[in-house]
Image (spheres, rainbow, N blue to C red):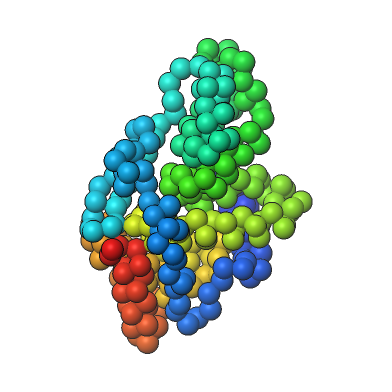
Length: 267
């Protein structure tokens, strides 16, 4: 189980290498270039094709924009059966099959950590729950194949992919690769209509671990998300961030938020 002290250490390691991230933005507010239509379409959830991953529900908040209401849960039944029955599909390109395997292995691993002395859950028998690498590899595969759920999780919790602080220090090059991928996944998801990705990008630009800290950019992404659905961004959060940036930066951020909104949320 991840403690708050461990997570703080992980964030400090990430922050120490933030300046080396290839997806940085400086004080002047800028946004990623618009992507090709086929790239944008690939970033949209399966709802655009008439179906969603099992357990996932979304709410439309505009012509193209949407918010995830519920995320998929771990598949029921034997973990060994889930892995063996879905592995072929996942390796053949089924992103949600890979994500389902990740969820199942993760759940078994967490149960083993929480109840080390207890008998293993019958649904986890036959699965090597100590092999944490197996879980994150399936998550990486799901994100690479385009699963929105996997991409949001991948970008929001680096420890899942990178391990603890000691793991990160042993392989700093992997941290840089992770940062590049995390920002790419969120930018593609945002331009495909995901308001959740807009909020995640706002958090990353404010936090300064995955990308250089850029409060005007964070403000711009929050404003774009609020324009899509005002209920998603508490006004107090917006006001607090507005106080941290100057009037000129705030004006530029508002202009940038309009472009971000157009790319994300308007066909």
